[in-house]
Image (cartoon, rainbow, N blue to C red; front, side):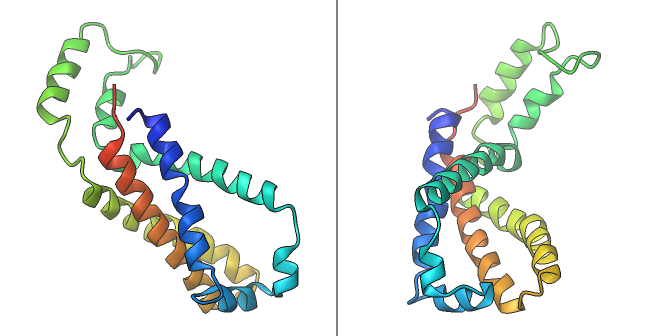
Length: 168
């Protein structure tokens, strides 16, 4: 699948995981308490806008994640013209094709993408999210509930992107 289709499908993952993760039968009640929400206030708001923006932002994450979990994308950046930073160095197209034929499927598994998703969640999302939550005086329980959600979501998203996205 091309990267846009793959990203569009992977962007559904946070919605599905969130439906399960933040359900009152799992972590929903603890999360609402940590967020200072009641059941009534959680139901308020423009849900179409919230879910629409969630999907848009999830698409952005999925699309960007190809550079984090598909090592072959780095090959294309190596072939940029140094003076301009655009295009492919003249004459390198054949070398790119040759390298892609040899290494184009290396590390292109769901499992490999999941590893990158877990690492990204732990070393990028957790610190970013925790800093904001600490200044907002949120509990560690609240931070860990949200981190767990992103850990699982990013592992699944990057697994899908790494396994199914086709580079051209």
